[in-house]
View: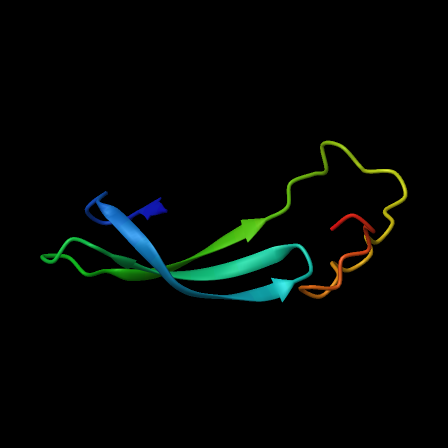
Amino acid sequence: MMHCPLCQNASHARSSRYISKETKERYHQCQNINCGCTFKSHESIAGIIMHPGQVTKAPPHPERGQSQLPWL
């Protein structure tokens, strides 16, 4: 949520799109009925705080009723 640049009330994100791998453009609309300003903002990655080690994929869950445990 961002504040409206004109009246400082809450605004809601209406839609968004990626501009690049690290930047998203969001379109907002002010929730103040007397204002209704629409504006856009950019959200970007500023830096990675902790980089994970090697990421391995987890196996998919078994289908319902096909437990891989013999006692279930």
